[in-house]
Image (cartoon, rainbow, N blue to C red; front, side, top):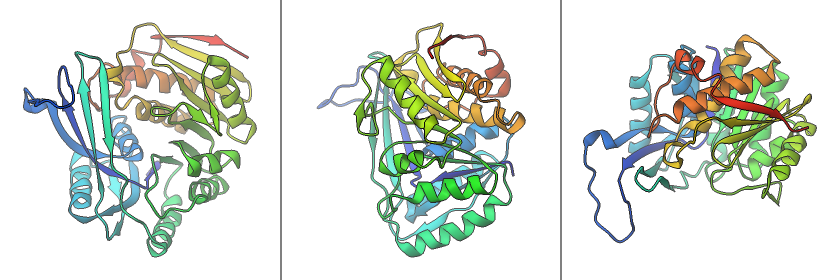
Length: 319
């Protein structure tokens, strides 16, 4: 196995394409292909994208109940390059609903909280995590955390992996993520700024705010920070400087689903082959995100797809 993906709070994702979606109205899905049910959670999404790149992974996290069984079963059926190693908990795995409206260029997301995880569950997870670390070269820790997870848990996972000499990449937000970032637990950190443009208690309002946030992440111990700025740009910070990646073409908001996970997968794919080549890894990530943005829902992209978009964006140095 090359990669271990940690999704502490998996989900059964339901994606609906509904044109001209409004509240307090009856809407009908016009075609069955516009109603999709699949395993989700950011780390699981990365595992599936990596499988499209031909890279095997182990998917870990907490699942429970009937929905959890459906998530694991469907994940196994989607790719034989993804090995599941979940911890079963008592409460039901969450469901997330995404309504994509291409006519209005909007994405409406309704995400559940997830099952409670107790100390026994966490102890079981850590035992399996330590065993799995010995089988991989990289660890991806992404997504939200379910109730019961202590604030220092992302730090524990990331720091343990770094001490074992692994590449550690994380995309998340919130107290658990920030605690780990401030202590340098991740090699590459990508704050998930979809719902709230705030990091370390500061609002990110203009490009300079994003630049300073990226620099702070690197100064805290990460080798690279990736921050999505507006829809068509990303701020990339490394120890060598800060850059702005800007797409050539307009990206519709309704096509953003899965682009962040594709960016992470592209970074991981490159760093597995070329350790420490962070700026070029970010270029691969950007190309993967642009590739994913060509589709309405989450799509399994390939490395050939990514290659075609390596020149689909401009790069300018900011610092």
